[in-house]
Amino acid sequence: MRHQIHDLLAPLPGTARQIHSFHFGPEQARGKVYIQSSLHADELPGMLVAWHLKQRLAELEAAGRLRSEIVLVPVANPIGLEQVLMDVPLGRYELESGQNFNRWFVDLSEEIGNAIEGKLGDDPQRNLELIRTSLRHALARQTASTQLQSQRLTLQRLACDADMVLDLHCDFESVVHLYTTPEAWPQVEPLARYMGSQASLLATDSGGQSFDECFTLLWWQLRERFGEQFEIPLGSFSVTVELRGQGDVNHPMASRDCQALIDYLIQSDAIVGETKPQPPLPYPATPLAGVEPVTTPVGGLLVYTATAGQYLEAGQQIAEIIDPINDRITPVHCTTAGLMYARSLRRMATAGMVIAHVAGAEAYRSGYLLSP
Image (cartoon, rainbow, N blue to C red):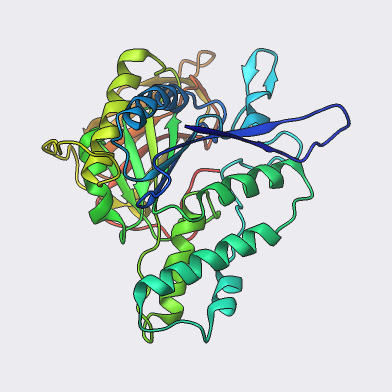
């Protein structure tokens, strides 16, 4: 194992933060896997899974069982990790800018396209290496003017040439689910099966230039631009894995999730071992554009009548909003049939608040598809 420390831009004299990356695998590795956790710093189940994975990868490396380089970043957001206000962790948005930590990573698609124009050829592998080299150089030329930009660039540079990128998150209260692209789904479906993902949400461009899509979108856009003339492999695929809810930080769950990731890495040929049979897929993959963000029309005490992981019929009640002053009870229904994979932690709802997400089978939304 090689431990690397990456200094972030210090916002003030006397302050310092770092990203720590742990690199496993042989010197002559076949391929690269990048795994990070807790980019939203108040989403900690993935950090515990990453810690378990760190121990297991050290054992596998010592046994000579790693084929690929595996880069692990267990604390992907030291800025957000420190943001605690009156005993409440605030790890989703940077307080100074108000920006979501998992948005607005650098989009270099046009720059890379211009750099490789006239250099692509008939050899797909050479085209892949040309793009990766151009991407590494382009990211190296980028400069950061804030600590947040510095953190984003550090993570992008660590992951830009990986064949596989796994970003470990969690929701508020939820079952295991994941986000990836339709193009990558054949490669990702075994992961969904091993993890027991109850919802797999697919979109090529969900908006916001999130960490996972800053890689997949680049390759997709280059293939759109040059694909009719030159063969360009899918040089990287990314998955955001949502490891249940914020409170699900315990060793039994983390150990199972760690083993599921290892099973997937064995299946993907990154680790030497016997491939385990894939379990059934709990729920078929559906378009992210088919997700219904269920909102409440009024504010009040939020009492759920449906649980995360429950399949709902269109029009089914999922909660009621109680006004304890006038005794009015307002039922809240979903309009889309599908699996309710996540719901809010809050129990005092405000009017217009999203209280749950239901994975419908048919796409009906467009544009920006992510939560704020």
